[in-house]
Length: 357
Image 1 (cartoon, rainbow, N blue to C red):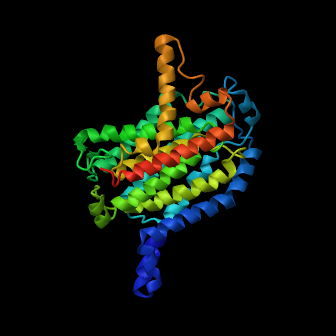
Image 2: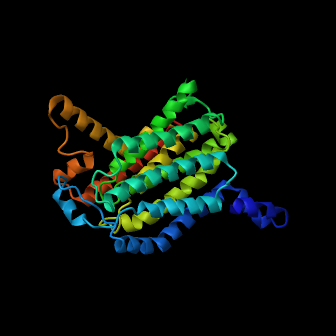
Image 3: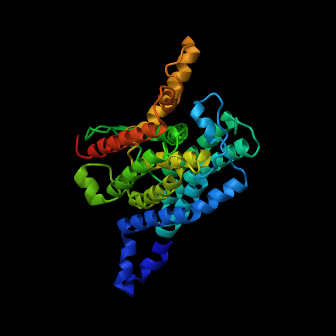
């Protein structure tokens, strides 16, 4: 919005030229989101306490979690709010990619909000029924996929570490996009089980895609790196910057011991946004590496459920895998920080694929 109103003033004063630069607006989108989180965080956390929107803890999980019962949840609404405000302020609101990404983020957040509301207010531990929840996620992802497809998104999918290796999905790129977005949304949701566990890797992943969005949206840099040039994708760096700032601000309150949990409203929206970023920047498969922590968490649940149904035996002491380490006796902060370290290593490896081919 500031870009839309202030950049035209550059013809009167050169100062306003700064608003044309994506790098400038990305930095200030992140700063705005961070400051808004610091300002609004205490108020919203207190409001959640007054409304008694407290976490419902599983009785079959690690015993150490019982003390977390009643901790305010649905704090992801803070992230959703400040990301939206920051993007509207600093983003180019005429860019279709920005609106697609905003649509997915808010849509997934709404599903998460309904799920959290049923659990916390209606006292139904099951929340939104799985079939309804999954169908709604697929619906939002499908709408986004169709918008992108009919807006002539490239249906080629690049293979990391290989310079010329690409697969053209053609019309099947639509279900592929749905798979990436829904998969990412649920993977982040499954990771959100310890204080700061999900938001840490999310900061790292969002920062990585912030860089990738800028690179693929710059025709000369994309050509130099031999990566796909995606017109108008550079603007998504502003959105990713807002995600980084909002997530850092949320981590301030969510770090161990957490003052607030993000709930499904936060995890589903952030995961959906990450998956959409991967699709639009044409680094879909690289998301497996960038979001490796989320992938492993999701796979641990799949293997656990599959093994139990087929053989009656469990692969892990408990799934997702972070609970396995808890039951094995690892202190919660150790699990969290080590997962963060792994996330940083994976992000660096992902960035290295820009040159290692």
